[in-house]
Each structure stands twice: as structure tokens, then as C-alpha cells.
Length: 601
Image (cartoon, rainbow, N blue to C red; front, top):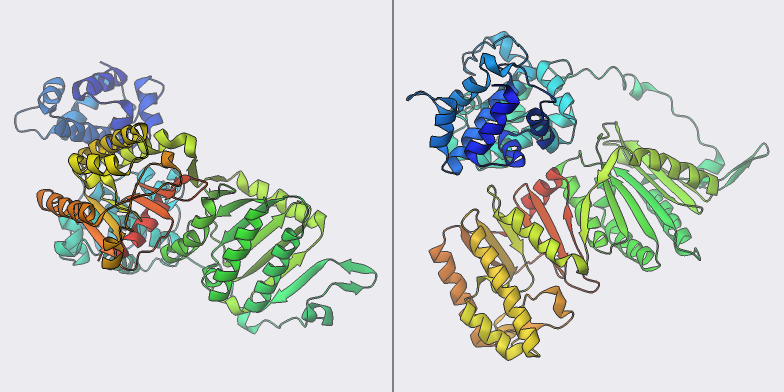
């Protein structure tokens, strides 16, 4: 029986789809489809077959199909299930491509000193300890799978000063928190198993472990001698930052130096756009400029100016470089999230992360002006910005932006009022999927956690008509069913503002309602609010995986956030025009989830 025929029988035995088998195996769904269609075959005794066997065994155990699978593969009485599946798939009749049988792996502590010396060997050992795939790591650190393969084999250096090493350490620290620390890794890192939940600590320990290899990548002498270089004197025109006329040549760029100069250039850039009579298309690309984004002067002024630009009908396309520090990524995201929900911003992220030595920013308004600045990372006081009103320069910058856009993917998926059903379906699919916890930040109490008799009483009192009451009950039952179903799969934490006694007694506490009600808001009476809180407390006692938290320092005013740990983040606006979006980048989901958890204490 050929390999693709065996794979088809395997799917039937465990009653799984191709996508489910691919997810469980850590492979791309297109690979499994090619194997089923006999368009491609993995090597015999290769890791792909081992991943498929492990994934099938996991699905069989979760779906109570172990007996059917053991019967199909002819497993011996004492044989481990995934070993039996791998033996059956690797049999001679599968006609797989021949590959030399790998030598059995020794334990981490038993490796020779020479083998333990390099980061490549340690990286490979980590992946084998967690049984993760190149594709899974590549998705997390935002590089191509082939790059991970080269890092593992040592064909490409991954030095201790390489930014990707930090991302790799964060990924395996995340796995330690989710799945625990494998025994051999715990011995190697000298970390007790009960420390697995401390993600920052594990990240630091892993990074220190990699540094012990002493395999830092060479700097290729790029900066050698820079301290002894002679500075070039500035002309009076450059010092003043004014348009200059020299030997009959007109310079149309203004030059600004230092952080204050950058802000002045940015003001000129935005003022030129705001003075335009017609809406323009604006292109922005930024890489590693958190020092600028965190400046109080920048944050307040930038946000106000960008909102004013959007209110004039201008549209913005922005490319983010997400291969950055988590703190910087969240700082950038917190600045841009309020703009994403306007619907006038199209965010993208680079699939080929920028690993230059510079912090960079470019912006261009088509036919109007352009701005750019850059500096060495860590040398922000030496930043130089350039501003130009030349349409030709703006067109050139826009053309370069277009070339960069070919290496980028959309960062968010947007939902409008007409996509309400799709939004709820996507949220429920992600929320009920096995895996990490769900955290919900909501500015109003959700009816999902209240009993039906209380919901009916509230809607009978507050609904404007019978049709509205019926619509609210239909909404409540659908959300309640999905909510209770998800509690059988994952843990759910709901975070609400801490309401004052005065607000409760005055009946100012609102109820979360569907978008279809528009601007109308339903509110609790004091008795209804207390009964709902008692129901929430009872639910928390009955379900150990449910928790409700109130926070006096609630971070969001007009948006709700639903976050699935490392899997999805949905941001829902609650003011007109109603809109929502979800992040399409797994590392960004992880960063948002990490920062939301700061408010759970």
C-alpha cells in the first residue's frame, strides 16, 4: 500500500480533516494535501513522517479513536502508538524516498563538549526536545522556514548579537510556559520545573545558555575605525536647515538634526498634508524607532495630527517591521490601534524583516511632500531628518514603498457592520479551539455570564419593542451557548472596569449589547447588577477555568479586546462608525496578550 493511500486510511481511522492533521503535526496544510494527492512524498525515516505519526496519535487520543488506529497500523501490545504509526508509514510498501536512518539521539547532558559548543546544535536540540517544526518556529519569529533549517544545520550563523536569537528564546520560553520544561532541558538549564510559568526568567536563562557557546557572529568590521573618523564640516545652509542655492543648483530638501529637529520635520510634513485641498494617499514605513515613539512630545502631538489627517479624508498605508523588541512592538501598536479602527489605515508587515544597523522612517504624500530620517541604533542623539516638498521626490519615495510592499502582508483583517456574523463566528472558532487561555477586556458587562431568567427580566424591562426584545434574547442565547461551550475547552478571564458604588446605585452601569442596537445603551438597575455579580461569583466557583476581574485602572475607553493566548486578538470599537479588526500576525498576538495580562492582578 502506497504512502498516499496509507495517509488517506489514517485520516478515516481518526476521523480528522487534512487541516486538522496538519495542525496537529505542525505542518502546513498544503504539504498534507500534496502527500494525499501523491504529488510529493517525504523521505523514509524523515522528520515529516515522524511529525505526521505524532499528530495522528494525538488526534486519535483526543477523539477516542485509539483502538481504530492501533488496529489499522497493526500495533503490538506494548508498542507506543506514534511509534507504531511511524513504523507503518515507513514500511517498504509505502515506496518513500530512501534516506539514511538517523542515529538515536543522546540526552542533552550526555553530549560531547564539542557537540554542545555551537548555537546551531543547541537550537536543533531545543526543537527536538519540544518536537516542534521549522514552520512553527518560522511563523513565530517571522522568517522563512528555510532560514530555520539553515540555522539548525549551522549553514547560517546565529550569533548572540543577532536579534533573531532573542525571538527564538522567547518562543521556547512560551512553549515552556504552555507545555512545561522537558526533563532533559531542565537539567541542562538548571531550572526547576515549577519556574516554567515565569516566561521572562526562562527567556533570560535560554539566552544565557546560548551565550555559553561563544559563537557570536562576526561583525564583518562594518564599524571598525568609526570612532577615529573625521567629521565632515556642515555648510551654513545645512546648519540652518533651509533651502540652499549653491553654484546654481537648487536644493529642495531641508535638513534637521537631533530629536527636536525630527519633530520639526514631522510638523512640516503633516502641515503640508493638512494644507492640501484634495485627499492624498500617504505611505509610511518605520523600523525600530521606539525612542521617538515613546517621547511624550511625540506621542501626544503625533496622535492628534494623525487623527486630523484622517478626518480630512486622507488614507494611510503603513508597513511595520515586526521583528523588534516586544516592548517596542507594543508601544508602536498602542499608537496605531486607535487609527486602525478608523478604516482609513491599511497596515502591513514585512515578511523579510529589516536587520539593518539603523533606526529608519520614511513617509510620502503622493504629489505633495516626503520625509525621512535615520540614525545608528543606540545613537538617537545623532539622528538626521530630511523634508522635501518636491513632487518628484515624493513620487520616488512612493515607488520605493511599492517595491517594499511586494515583500509585505496585511497585518489586520477588518470587519464592518455587515460582517457581524463573520466576526462572531471567527471569535467563537478561535475561542473554543484547544490551547491557550482567553482574556476579554470589555468596558460593559457581558450578558454571557448571566442566567437566562435574569436576561429575560432585563430585556423585558429595557427593550423598546417586542421585536427588539426577541432580537436581544436571540443574541443572548447564541452568545451564552458559545460561551459555555468554550469553557469546556479553554480557560476564560473577563476583565471589566471597577464600578463605583455611586454608579451602581444610580443605574449607570451599562450592559454589552450587539451592534444592531446602534447608539442605544441598556443599563442595569442596582438589584439586577448585584444579581449578575452573584451569578458571576457562582460561575467562578463551579468552573475553575473561569475568572472575572475588575480593574480600577482599566486601559481602554471605547474598545473591547478578545485575546486568545498566542492565537488571535480581536479589537472591537463601540462608537460610530462600528468597526472591528483582528491581527493576522502570530507574534503580534503574543505581544498583545502578554501586555493585557499585566492588568489581571
